[in-house]
Length: 112
Image 1 (cartoon, rainbow, N blue to C red):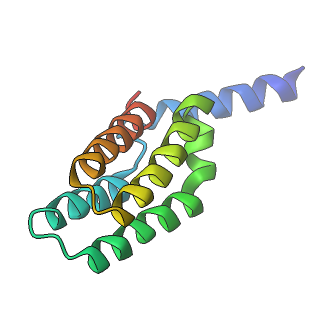
Image 2: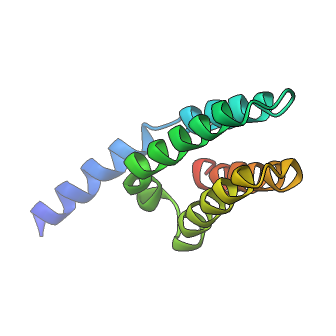
């Protein structure tokens, strides 16, 4: 019982010490770069940037799963796939919509 109480107290102290945002700045920076690239579209550059976003998400998905719920991280994954398809079609409107969706879902994950 004492061991359980000690672990609980240690976790409580550890979590209460986190006063800053939990993270995600790297995602938001990548999204901002993509939005800026849409002003004068270079489709190869945009495709490279979205692949970087996808790779970044794949590498950090476990973190998102820890702090978000299933609907959020599955929604991000689906939106990234729709974003890739919209870029292949060079559809700026859908690209902007998917970027906004991804950003919104990430804000839901990273704000407490």
